[in-house]
Image 1 (spheres, rainbow, N blue to C red):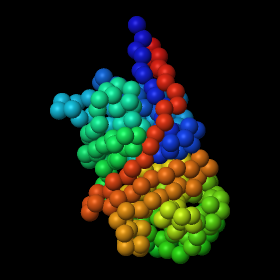
Image 2 (image 1 turned 60 degrees about the horizontal axis):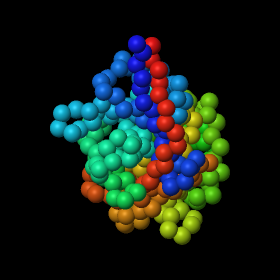
Image 3 (image 1 turned 180 degrees about the horizontal axis):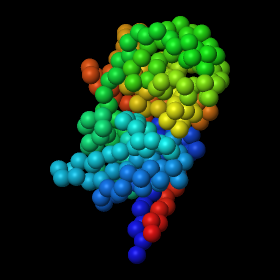
Image 4 (image 1 turned 90 degrees about the vertical axis):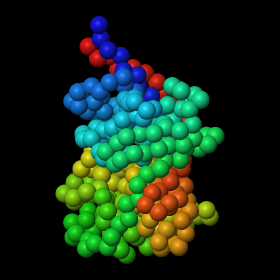
Length: 264
């Protein structure tokens, strides 16, 4: 008898179908071999596939895989996992507590809004590797580093205009966030995110990048509450609230489809 693994596809950080960042979510009763998890993520061919397993005390162990590797933190797939828990599996639930490679993560539901309690990852000034500027084809006003490179440009138009050389970007250590001040009412800053080395040429909306973007822009704009827009082709919005060493990331989600993996 084969095993059936449920799979939900969710568009995260958007209220609109076919926008935001798509993630697959596979609830499990127990962990499967890592090779199987990676094969499922590769088959999904989305930026992230999230898997979670219930643990004692009402906590869920959460892991995330790109089509090629496991990652240490993913915002949109965490939002998608909480959305599936609270709208498909346990509809009375309003809080989800996860254990992850990045420590404890909580998601709280308020109506149709979901707030992720994530670690703050402030960037520090860094020398720009020549390969990075060449790969991006632009001149930064500042370059900083946390888990990812943070490349600051002069305008939102410049961020939208970036056309990276993905082959060259593959040779740059770590993923790359490109950001600038917002150019629309109610948008404090914009960004894009490139991670070809992780199997994600451009991520549509990147929650984990805002763990670095939020403290950077909070310091620059002298405010702890910020509205962000990721200006990828699909686009998405995140409300960021800096809470000391944590960042609250608030967004919405939409269920796209459901199905099953048939493991024989």
